[in-house]
Image (tube, rainbow, N blue to C red; front, side, top):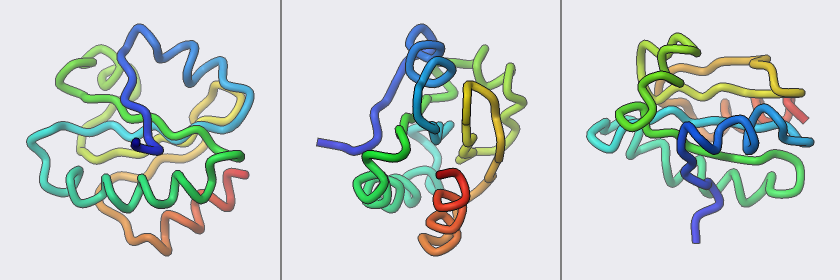
Amino acid sequence: MSNVQEITAAQFDQQVRQSPIPVVADFFATWCPPCKALAPILDRLAGQYAEKIRFVKINTDEAPDLAAEFGIRGIPTLLFFKGGKVVQTLVGLRSETELKAAFDSLV
């Protein structure tokens, strides 16, 4: 089972905006090679931060309105939410070390 839950646009408010803990939202597409490379790294790290951060992924092809709302221009894009608001954005494939530092600053 994956540590990163794929959600739909309909689930976004409940899973992200109303979350009592910080959320990392991975905006991706199934055809995107960097997205595929990021997925196992994100899944591994999500297991390490399971009690502190919720991890979700949103397929931009299936949720174009959400992608437009947040100005997603390149994928993968990670949006960091705290209290329902975006507090940080990372665009593109990042190293595990860089991701851990970003997650540590979120919690």
